[in-house]
Picture 1 (cartoon, chains in turn yellow, orange):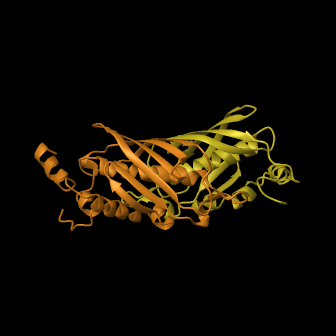
Picture 2 (cartoon, chains in turn cyan, green; picture 1 turned 30 degrees about the vertical axis):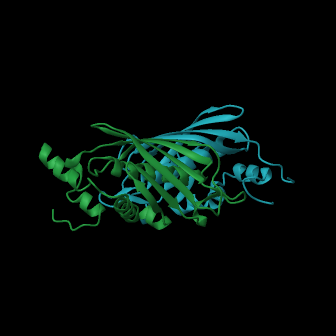
Picture 3 (cartoon, helix red, strand yellow; picture 1 turned 180 degrees about the vertical axis):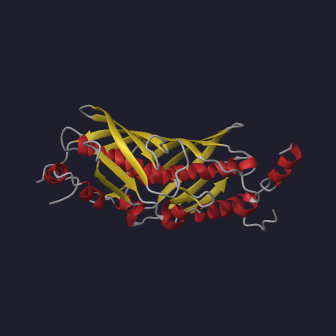
Length: 156
Length: 173
């Protein structure tokens, strides 16, 4: 298996290159809802973006994005951000996820930034904030607990 | 809204059969673009409980190499199934946005199989609806559990004819 999340060399290489799009290419549901990532101009982290696709709408009356899609976006952002900022290349697995909805997410681009609050030997806690027009008016905050697994060696 | 109007509105819902609820909630998930696009189906409804089925499709993948479902799919599904339970757990359907949702991931969901989603309303207060939901592919092995709390915006903030539209009846409002 020359490439993929379970190949430590590939994981280390894409991570060193900051190639988050290579990771997103291997996440069909994240691609389906339209997640992308770019380097944060203001710092050394990542900013994630969710496209306002018509098929991401959950309420046609308002209209508003599906709350579950916003959650899936933030879960993806938190996981990839951890893979990017952890001390070493490791593949995280979600243990639990919690989201608070603060404002209606309108059908416009949504952004997310993550903060790694704790990186232990086996567990990590990541906080995610999502916003649309203004970062100081978040549409949702979320947090994830993840187990950090050592990737399988290339010859596994 | 006075008490009598509340009762009349409740009559739209009172005495609905499980089949009528299944059809109403099917209409609901078909109106939502995201779940219509994924082909989500309502299998059974017995208020305040509902069971749905998400057919397999490759867009649900999160780990291509190991054939595992994306965790976000499970969160989205729990939000949808808990929110649908809310509709059939109220005296009459109201628009109820999700306040918060907590998901515990017990084990990964496997590619190639449908995912079943069940949810029920645990408690309704004047302001809130408390729900819980479970996902599974094998009923003996739950994939994830969710706790979702929903805000009641009340009849005043629910569009006229909302219940009638849910049940596919002429809207004379």
